Every structure is written in C-alpha cells, then in structure tokens.
Image 1 (cartoon, rainbow, N blue to C red):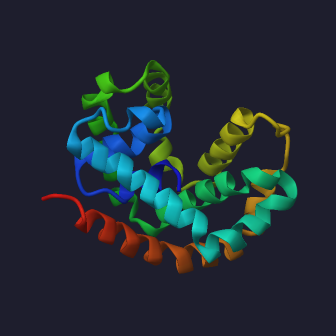
Image 2: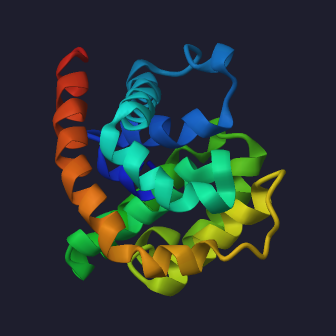
Length: 192
C-alpha cells in the first residue's frame, strides 16, 4: 500500500509516524524509536506482508507487469490509494490529509532529512488529498517511474491505469476489507 492507505490504517498519531518512518529507516533502526512509533513500523510491515501475499494483489499486478515487470506492485499500491481516496468523502479525505501533515511535522525531528524534503512537497501539493484525482495519481506514477532505477520515465503506466480502472477497482474492493480486518487483528495484539 502507499502513503494514504498506510496513514488511513492507523489508530494513533504515533502509529502514523511509524508507518511513514518504515520506508526511511534501516531494518536495524526499527527498535530505536518509542514503543508507539514502533507499533506503526510493525503495522507498516504487517500491511506490506499481507498485501504482497493476497491473491487480489497478484491479479492486479498482472495489469501492470507486462509494462513494468517487478515494479508492478508499486503501481498497484498507488492505484489503490486512488480508490481509497475516492471511497472517502472529500471533507474526510481533506481532514485526514491535514491531520497527517500536522502529526508528521510534530515528529519531524526523528525523520531523516530526505523525509523532510519529501514532506515539504507532499504538504505543499497536498498529495494525500489529490490521490482522488486522475492528475494526482498521474503525478504519483511519474514519481515512481522517476525513482525506478530500471524503468523508462516515459512508459505509459498512467494510460494502463486509465484503461483498466474498472478492473483495478474490483480488485481493490475485494482486497481492502480483508486488509482492514488483518490490521485490526495486528492492532489488537499491541499493548493498550
């Protein structure tokens, strides 16, 4: 899952921080944060593991894999943030995005500098909110292509998304309730 889903599938502000931190730290650093932030890191890992093993994800990856091969999962993640964003009311999505930026700013000192630079752009352009728009998802696809070491930045990934939107939506609809149930079980295992 991508930024919106990871932040949406949290129960505390500290877990939001851990969800974002996971992609910016080394494996050996994961136990060096406060317990509640660590829960977010654990939750992020549990989400990724569950997602990678789910049959709906395997099927959704087939849509992108002829074009991007091993990067198909990253494009499915971004696509699913689009469907999640569109399942929320505009007000709820906007309020969620603003809350996430406020929380991340409060804990910014524990993030590496690379994250702070990304957060500046994320907040300025309100990435989380604009996942609901085709243009916002198109921007995210370009970002993934830009960062992908072995992919041509001009690949027509966004066009593949647009022409398969209905099929991807059905995979999301079948997958996301399973993920929510899994996250609730993981969360139930944390100390209260």
